[in-house]
Length: 135
Image (cartoon, rainbow, N blue to C red; front, side, top):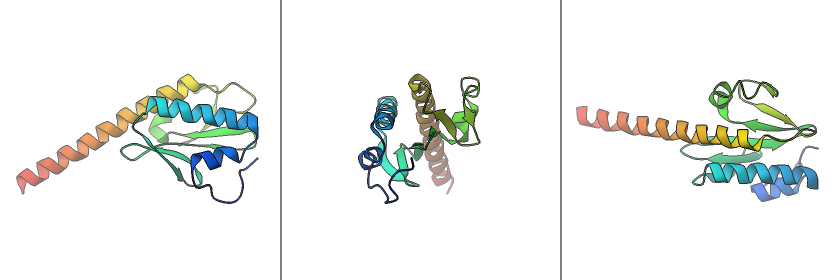
């Protein structure tokens, strides 16, 4: 059930390329992310829905039997106990299409990633300020 081989221009187009039951799950994931990260920008990156907030935040994509959720390795490591029922790899989580999608867990991971990106941006800004003072 890979999407159309044409590259989607936006998340609406991406979601529309799937059967209705999968569209509903993808749209709910999208809404969950938007709620957890209201300042995030939507994009298509690596041919999949992406949210950016102070850098890449999360990606997601639908496949034949699962939805892949990509919150960076830190998003997986920090929630490994809650993710024990799901297949994971260094940067990906697979949510089977035949089981309920854990939207609350997705929300919690996104909130974690927002905080992580904000902390990284603040740290970068502080380094820049400190280096300009010493120069």
